[in-house]
Length: 370
Image 1 (cartoon, rainbow, N blue to C red):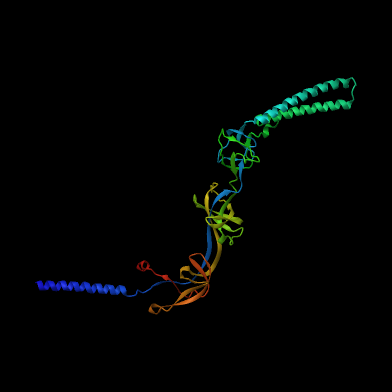
Image 2: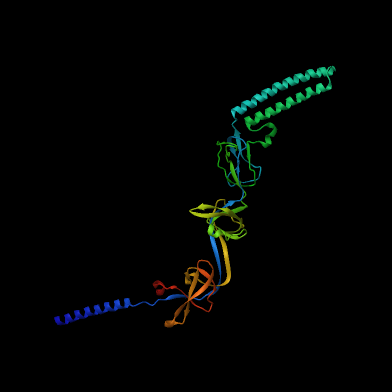
């Protein structure tokens, strides 16, 4: 019995040894290399680029006050539509004390001059009635009285403007009423009731009361790399996709290419602008992030192969044309002249035809199993 057990154990060990040897021998044998195969075909190729940017109004105007003061009332809100001349806010004037004192002094002097001119006129009129002075002398006194009256009115108006921001004589053109200078949508009102505002002058840009824009005239603004800007021309069509409105796409026409580059993230970029052609029902807001797709070049009905089948060697390009079948299959390295590429397929101008087959990249193990 022990003798049989030893024989069985010896047989098992021998089988394991032989199996291991066969396995290692099979693993050491060179594997057959299998390649993808492609047939050149007629197709259309276009080279496109994607530009990131944003949508904004062509004309966006900051409305600023013509006088310094405090916001006393806001009559509009962001999102409201206004016509040119509509009142957006009211300003309560806080007068400058030096200007106020000067204006008050001018009124007092005007009153004194008017009283003196009135006295002179009455005296000269009595003398003229008695024919003791000439008509020329009387006319001069009359003119002086008229000038004094107008000076009093002008001084009073100036005082009211300094003190109240408006005079009785020009109430309709009051600078305390902040009016929109264009028709459009109010994008922003950065002030609140009670905020101090100042007018624009040589030393200050002034306080922005509101930002108004025509939302029916929008542009796409973005930057394109210097390697692609040379392929752009004004009038090129673009497809605009807005991140927040994935279901809507808009056409746009390129209308501006900056003549000067700006550096961005270590590369030179050129600013571009394109007029957006709105579609009905497209609710567009200022500042939306957007992508613009531009076709830089296009070739229709040209012979193409996958770019992965091309071998690049210096300035030359080659493909491996398949000859024969089965075990007799060979690969003939053939020079080809290439053209436009879209990153996946490439145009073949010369070297192969639709009757040829070309070798692609090697089929990896996962692909073989599939």
